[in-house]
Image 1: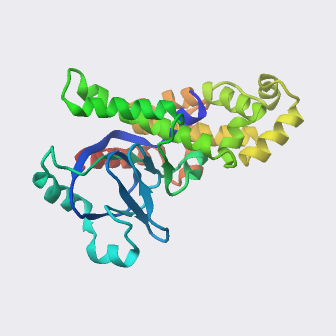
Image 2: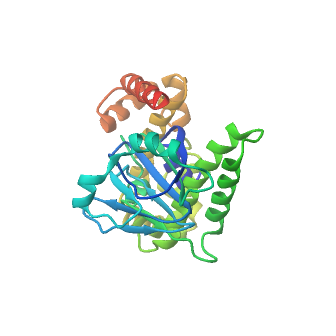
Length: 312
């Protein structure tokens, strides 16, 4: 896999929750912080988004916004400030219940697609951790065509129930997350990880490590894969990524093992082989050093978290 796919897969839990929201009149709702990423796409009308300590953010038709760290926020039909939000904002779940039955399909003023991606934030890849509190992606002509296509497809699927919708909708929502992160990388060229993946040497080395983390990598072999000398690889990779290539590989192998413990029934011996450790004991030692717990306890905790996600 590639870095972005792996970074998302390492934290992604279950299926996203989503809702097509139609409303009219004056409204103001509050969503408390949670372990996940939230998103809004405005399909009709406009609204305003407010997070703690920030100015209200206007959102118009076609605008998308990602809150990758589950930041608590207020969404309203007017540019609300913190003082007004404290008095007027209704809990989001209560607002959904109270608003939806009153809305007539032919009279709504604002229509949005909103939802949550459940994430395991125990060990987040630095690419995901670098995402800002709010990623606003305005609807500009000619920009982010893949994202616009995904939004159009989602809106079409939501207009009517069609054969295969139960498979199409979660898949399109997962695609939406990928496209929002891609769009952020395009618009944030000064960010650390956009720079990393834009550097031919670091990108080639990361591509090799992520495509086969279990391979017997050495600095010499990785330098040959990137087409540079060993000192050049060490200097470029360490400067951009923040750790030497083999240290990154060791860290990624343990994170990959955690993902397999969470998402598969594979034995520890099988997982050790898949991520490049010679024995379950060696993996268990490295895992406990990184996570502060044993693989077995981590798997049990992950199962409980996944069960909680499925019930929400």
